[in-house]
Length: 234
Image (cartoon, rainbow, N blue to C red):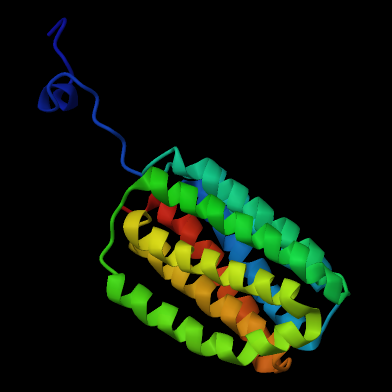
């Protein structure tokens, strides 16, 4: 009948229903590519191959494409995730080069990237129960810091130790922010970032155990993927 409204508009009081979040075909293809490149990077890491200089930065580049291609739960969260990934990419490039003096710059880039993710969690406002998890992980952080903070101070004095402490504070804030506003998959991502960074700090200051070093890389990529995936998870 002429002038009749479509059934879906009638059911929603004349207002078009909000489309649910979606992992589009392009986003799914980019995510699959990111996963494949990440696995290749893990193999290159285990073999100490120079191919890592291309493989590791390629993962966040592909994940940025995923973030820009999805139909998110909250569109305002996307720019924060993209900035966080871009800063992680910059941090990867810095730390892939040799030289102990690059650690402070790398820590700064990753720390600001975590703050960008926090901004996204604030825009999302999806509170998740997980206060006990945060408390347990923060307590574990204090215990782990007892092993690598003295080593950091011996290597770089109070300045380097202060940088590490500041980074741990940002990491704790990332965990808390994910619980308060990121949703359950973001909490998983933040907790995985926590594990990755503590493994990396242990490998860097206490002793480069190859298994720890590789595990830090694997968990780092999984954390990035989880936070990107949280864009489309209610």
